[in-house]
Length: 157
Figure 1 (cartoon, rainbow, N blue to C red):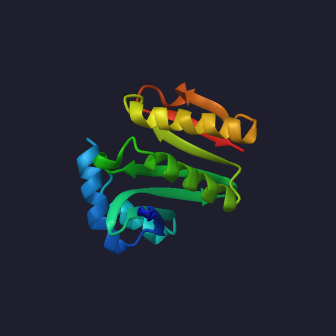
Figure 2: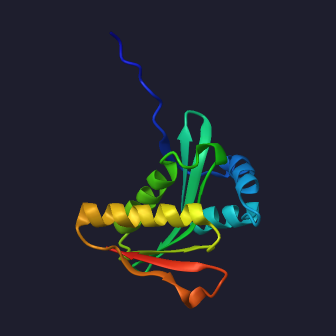
């Protein structure tokens, strides 16, 4: 009997050379995607930008801004063909761990109320955090402060 090894997705720092692939995913999954300039500016500003790759193929990515004890998840995206297979959860957990490692006491994020997949992902991660840490990570879930355009979340540890 021989074991078959599966490729394991690898988290890497995002580089300018990744942006063409990142933009292809943005255009494919969003009606209002980030621009190449948004990503280039994030890289130049020193934000925490990561890609998740399976071999050479880009699966997803996130952009995290951390400062003054807070973190804001600016973008978390997964290529359409890889959605709902655990990669969004992996990226969100990586972003949460990175934020915490950078001294953030919590993580802010926004989501359009119509983005049911993202909302399900965030609730799943909140539930995971509760069972793992035995405490709720959220001070405010689905705050109405952002009116109808966006929903603000804050996960505090």
